[in-house]
Length: 246
Image 1 (cartoon, rainbow, N blue to C red):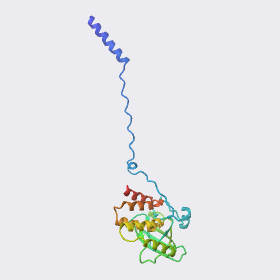
Image 2 (cartoon, rainbow, N blue to C red):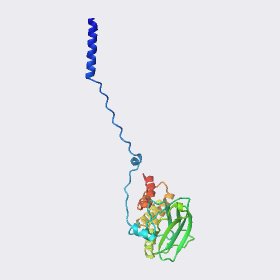
Image 3 (cartoon, rainbow, N blue to C red):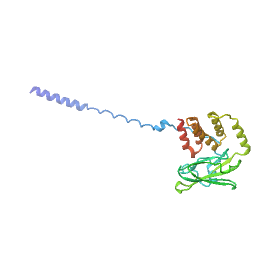
Image 4 (cartoon, rainbow, N blue to C red):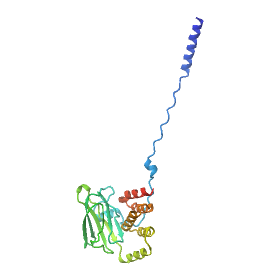
């Protein structure tokens, strides 16, 4: 009997101690940090170097008044060119954002109304062909593209090009002639000269031809990317070029 009483007392004591010291639950582990965007880790947004001289229009508003329509970057169809730019070559290459398989009409006219030229194009670029009359030194022209199908969106405003006059052409030709030789170094130096003279069409064509010839030269993508970075319409092209550099 005595042993039974002792057992009951010990059990009661154990219950009392357990009630006074309950088992504390382990604190919940803090949530893991949100994973960082991998695209931001690999490709931080670059600092854009804005350069004067490629865009000759005093403002986008005045350029739009010349063309009679909007050239917003959000449109389906947009010209890959400044609103107004000077050009050295008499046969520039024209490019635009659109459907590579769609049909467009490219139209060029001078601002005096004495010259006009059209060509049907399938794709998103056209090198002004040798069977067309060359542009005139010192002349000012408007060019635009009009989609054949209305499903491709409205045509953007025309872009204006100012062909370098005879006196300035002689200076440019003399300077280019001072860069002798062929090959990558000489060709790159001539392209850089066109870039420094703020000749948008000529520089884009020169760097694009060099990239086709030397596709592994990352400096060429960097230069063309810097050129494309100057316009809202071509920032996506700049992104693609700088992706080849990083």
